[in-house]
Length: 115
Length: 114
Image (tube, rainbow over all chains, first blue to last red; front, top):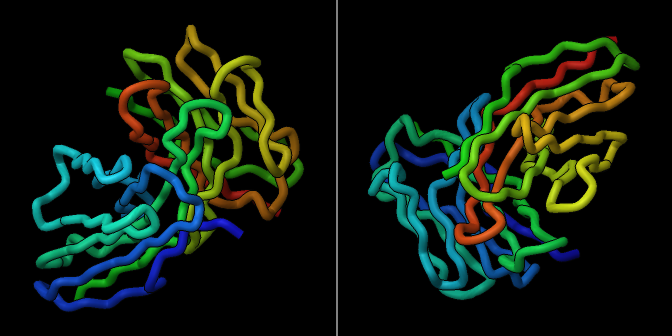
């Protein structure tokens, strides 16, 4: 089945140690998103790509970077994780074609812990 | 820019009772509207969506929602809930043109009691 896959499911890193989270999709969607979700809060959009066009949210910290080397893969790099970066990170995709099929497809998320 | 307000952070309800989860949005442009459900330790799953046409939309698991443009609302309803409906429910909006961003509300935790 076509899907959005995030690895790993759980990630533990140390304070200040760079970490990379991965996302892949078999849907061939144009748009890929990274959301940060803290406990009992709304998913917060960090950035999204339309194809290779990168769109950063104004309030996304510089500590967060992203790469999309091809249509299928997208990475979230946290350069120097702080304790406040511990959260669930959700990857999502959408077709980018407006109309009847418009919706977000989510991966299962990566739960990041910072020690 | 768009924003979403979910007025109730938690809604307890007894099994087989009806439930309504409220969602209001703000936008200067036309929007698509969505409800997503999140079970513990899982990603978000689409319940239903309003893109155009009939303002009453039906989704999975017996849920439905009604788009009210004049009140800028998109409330979610189910006539009879089950224990398995216990989850977090998020309302979201996305502009129909321009940006591809989806903006989420803060969520409503539905707790179904036996």
